Amino acid sequence: MSVLAEVLTVLLNGLQQGAIYVLVAIGLSIILGTLKFVNFAHGALYLIGTYLGLLVTLEINVTDGKLADWGYTPIGLEWGFLPALIIVPILVFGVGLLMERFVARPFYDRPDTDQILLTFGLAIVIQEVFKILFGGQSYNFARPGWASGQVGLPIIGTFPEWRLYIIGITAAIVVLVYGLIEYTDFGLVVRAGTRDAEMVELLGIKLSRPYLMVFGVGAALAGVAGVVGGPLYAVNPNIGTEVLVPSFLVVVIGGVGSIAGAVLGGILIGETLAVMVAVAPQWSQVGIYVLAAVVLLARPQGLLGSEEVAP
Image (cartoon, rainbow, N blue to C red; front, side, top):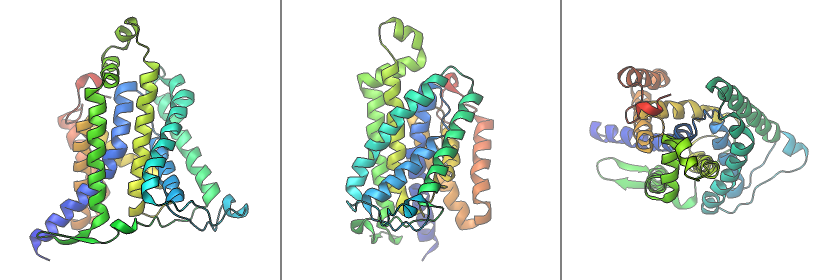
């Protein structure tokens, strides 16, 4: 493989890695930017989405945990990947609505530290529940058969087909979410509420329902990320925590509340990780923190963020 082909392969891998972070970070960003709620349980929504996707798509043999003790093995619907891509976001959307109503809403006016402690504790509880049910073992989330091969690309040669699907699915969802926020009455109310919630409510518009929907949409995006990202890694109860920190860095780099910022931040984080893994893998995690520190020093509100909503 030529040097140019290797460079392009690394960049394409970075784009795919960044796509997963984009899906998670957009939900984080719109919840934080609109509701001013710091949700450290967002990674748990990704965890829920991944396990639900696994169970809808495949049948797995559970050999550890309470499900095995209770005789629920094998378990799974085996409906395939496409049904999972439709069903799981709807289910996680419902989980997000419950989380907003019974966890987040009572803490909207509380300090950030209270929100962090609450959601971090909730994330640990959800992670432990999955560990009790499924055990600590890792499961293989097989790629769908129609996208499990290699595809030929100019210069690069062959490239995993599923990684290209992830980039395409992410791009389509980003366009949908951007259109929802920027070009619909719902998005107009949300954006107006972000700027001056008191004035919007004086006009007779209740913001509780739009805010509920924002939280649900953010949760659904984490569910989508769990389904499309699941086949890339071993599925275990720790995956929510592993995706949370890079996704928060994406929000910090791109700017709170900015969908375009989340996309830019996700690409930068993904590319940084891919390049560092190729050049100096032992420093790959350090690289993304250095990137975040440099951006914060230059633009505290993030690359595309507004100073009005800077954390």
